[in-house]
Image (cartoon, rainbow, N blue to C red; front, top):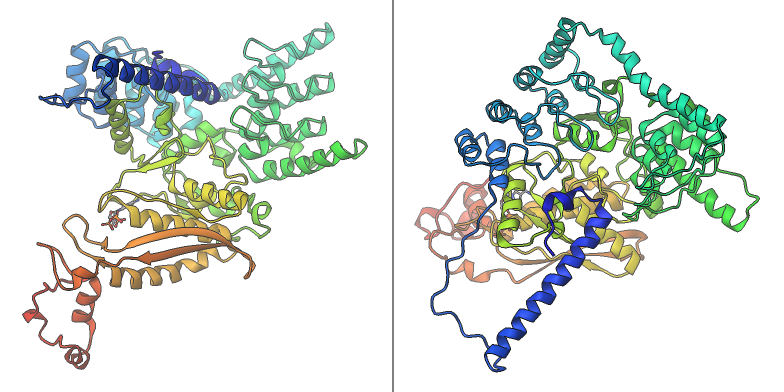
Length: 628
Ligand SMILES: Nc1ncnc2c1ncn2[C@@H]1O[C@H](COP(=O)(O)OP(=O)(O)OP(=O)(O)O)[C@@H](O)[C@H]1O
């Protein structure tokens, strides 16, 4: 069963996983059939003769994939060559959108010019209806904006009804260029505001007409989407209100089991969540990703409302006369009004896809906004492990979730497709990738701003399920282990495997950091102490090797387990075995002894060194190197 990758990526995640599972089954069946027929040919002998001349194995990438890589890395010659060789400029990209969207994101004006010359439309929109100009504005790429302005329709609206100018930050060159362009073309910026509210008012009058004519308010389209789904996702409060008051079903599920409440929670429509709950929408329904609306809520007020609603829903199941959940009327005036310009909103209130794009663009978050502090108390009976903390700005760079986040969902699993995807992701600093529940890490060998307290908070989950709006991360694996431990009530173990220098020790530190933080109110206060412990551990167990200047020369076992005696819910153990003792008496070529030797040589007093026969370290056959 051959399925085009683009087609596969266009499917909702549930369908995609089912389809891929079927494809894998078929692949395995085909493999066994091949093996059987081979055995039959060899007269039932099971051992296959080794080929005398082993064919050299070449990994080949598709030109359509190579061009994306060339655009990202500004390899202009390669882009030119590939286009000359006939690569279609209309090739869609794996993360959605066109090659021009990719150019806009990576500020590759040269490639963009080539593509436009070859007929690629500047008005192409991705699945969120973003044009390349929306992307260029978010990323503040002024040259790209100038290029695109030559042909783009600057008034094209995305899924939220926002035009590119809505995403340009006030005072930047991009914003100036766009405003000037609009003025020169006789567009009054204030009239655009009126245009934005036109869509909800048109829908409102259509719905009123439908109600007056007695038409069906619950009629789904072929994807199971109803008017209420549309109004909730788009934030059309009045339309939602008319629909609910006129008797529309408050919890219809579309073909992917998304209810209007899921959409309102995901798209940060606080007042609509409140309205839906007051009209009896069921907050416990699961969508195709097994998420309740609470699981995908993007802000604290929404999550709180949904949590209360879940409790009262359970009560009403036992006692149908129990009252409907009380929702906070204060949200009815709604901070997420359509008329609010997007840039004035808290980034966390922006629909998730756009929020991710902002994260990618190193968005600055104010931690004190507290919008992320929402669920831990439900998990472990403790207050938020992250405390209230001082207000501080934090820089986070997370890539938006992409279809290739999980390699198990690729249509084709071959050496070349896996290597290609990994290489592409590495080029984008997407160092983590899932293969099902396994997490792959490619050591970036540079600091990435993806391990802060804020990111750790983002990966907290009340259920342990992966959050579909966050990219793969070591924190997510740590979170999963934590929940498995709670569910199975037995210790969990991490297996970190890879060659020397691949990043196992660092990964272990990140796991311990996340677990310490999530398991205790004082989590982050333990961090400095953990650093001290690590220093001692590294001094006695690490040494410089050819591959890694800080290689651990012992085997570690990291488990996490419950510890009821001390009433702390979690304990992480690093058991250490098998120190590489031979290193003390024999050094492989170009390698060093354990770090403690050099630390002593540098730091001890003359008397101490003398007592240890270390006063003439230069005479020692171990090389003395400065220690960091
Ligand atoms: N996630 C990461 N981000 C940035 N740099 C990293 C990361 N992981 C590893 N590194 C860099 O790579 C170096 C080697 O990593 P690390 O010591 O974790 O490898 P290892 O697999 O434990 O090696 P060994 O088996 O030799 O102990 C680190 O000192 C660090 O500089």
